[in-house]
View 1 (cartoon, rainbow, N blue to C red):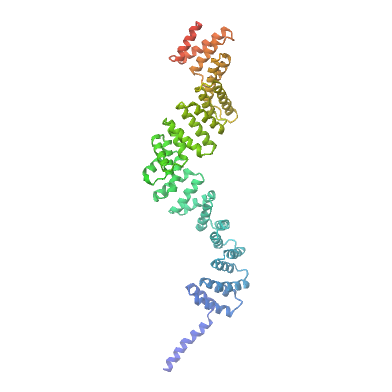
View 2 (view 1 turned 30 degrees about the horizontal axis):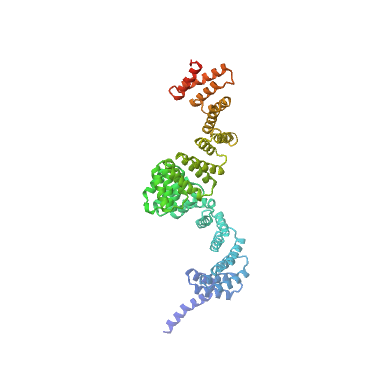
Length: 502
């Protein structure tokens, strides 16, 4: 019995002696690693009791208090650690963590920045600054932090993602673009990144580039209505209008909005499917008659189908709600042309004059005004309008760099002025205008006949020259347009002169 007790004491006592010799700091670290924070705290307290000048004991005790959510105690011992070892960046990082846990972000960031004074290339601390700043809605500071992370580690997915989201929310799409381009490569299975990337490509004008990504998104998640919008517009911009039409054909008509029907109508309009386009626009109009995008497009479609009264009504609606000069000009001018077709010339003239208030140098508007005045038999006003056509067409040739753009308008203006001058027996002036018109249309038999008639009647020139020039132009008419009404009149002119073509 006594021998057994003696053996047991010999076995136990050496263990007791070894326990007394164990380093409490090491024991605390072991307990910390196991998640035994109560045991770790006990050991670290013993460590600083044994050595009150050891900063490691205070630092580890502060770290453990933080894990145990004893934040006030953590601050106390970490401040002591900082006083003992002011050059240790880990102490400042832990203090920052405690302040963040106490929801004092400014104090936490101050401590993190202190870490960076010793270790500027610490990506984890930059990430903590970024996250804290983001949560405090200090987005510029957060962006700066994430940029620094990427400068240290260009593959850091967290910094990529968070910086991309910040730029996206701030609508700084050009800055977000390269980040999302990387994200969709790094995580090709992420539909969320692709949805954002499509929007960014749309907002930055890369509409052709968004097509494959948008197609993948809507294939995997047909509920992404915004992506559908971007895709259909991209198809429209790239001329793939049949695809726009096909997208909407596959969708439930009752699920489409008024704006969807507008886009569908646009696609059909560009595909020259006018009846289908009108049906889509009219459906959109019934759903929401306040959408002004409908008015102008539907007005032009009605013009194509010769529904002129309905066209004028639509252009009037656009004029009433749109203050932009471009649409006011175009709507007034299109309304005027529609009114001319239904022979409401006086009313048409009012619309043309209104259009010229917005585009006073527009050649087409002056041409239409001249034609309208001609229909109203206002010869003087018609001539004044054609003179404006000539003035602004030539200005476009010489000043605006649009040489040759208004050949047809110039030819008409010169020809109509020549007609007027011929009727007023101002033959020499008429010849001058016909010559100018022939520069743009040298084989126009109407012009050639006019020239023959002008020379034939130009009694201010010697008869020999008159007859020679008149014969030359009459014969050109017969040669170029042998079976035309102009040729018949040219033959009559030659007979009056007693001449024949060679």
